[in-house]
Length: 374
Image (cartoon, rainbow, N blue to C red):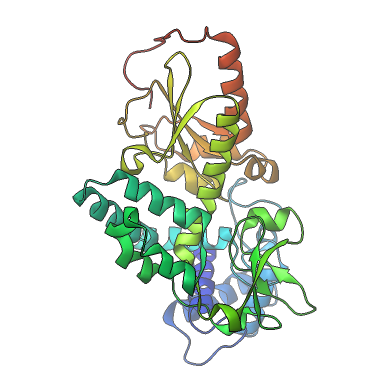
């Protein structure tokens, strides 16, 4: 699968540098390598190869990966998988996952930008002894990925966030006016990220989940002239923190509606949710919103043992499983043997919680097992 990984990496590099609608020679090395490998793959299959980088980019939006001239395992790609969104020509989440797999495979020690930022935030909050600071920082990144100049300034009056004030300024870069239409920025009414203006008066949301729910609703319009500078959380954090975080807080709402006690990101983000039942039974939950189940399986690891719990789960949004049959089975095949984590959908976890509430006597501690179940 080197071709897919290399092409995905090239698309992400182009998207970050020149954009995917303008190319300048000489191409970055990974881009030239991707084009060369693609040409060879199509030629070996007796098919017409892409005549240019522009044509390769177009094929990444038009041709599902299952129709590429590749020999792949049956669960390597889904029937509708593409590397570029056909409407915006921006890399899909799957493209980003292939790109990161390529980077990690070539250098197992690579630390991605989101990991560096969150590690810095953890270190600063720990050094101040402020777990609440980290929890509020994480919540900010999930719930407010877009800030006006006034809103960013107001955060510097929130002393809970004092350990990470400087970090917030670094990870919320200015948004260029190219994101506006008729002088306004549009914020997605579902996920809170900025919408990208498309030709024909339409808007495009970068979140997979939003796009699968139909045209994105505009949550609010921010007038550029009135708001001054607008800031948006940088892309790696939007993808790795905001996106999964939305699934985390949605699951929190569903479990608290059942009457359960839920703590978000306990123990300085040891895992995502600590769920406590009326009888004292405790669940540890890590939420993962990954497009490719095999990549998620390879990343599997036991849930950290502290804060203590009785059972542990990894949870994926149900839409991921619906759009890729066999998702959970592919995850199990790919995960390391020593990472015996159970993967449920958010719907399955909610049903399990409801069933446990119905079966367990309220207020009575049920010690079904000793220690933790990772």
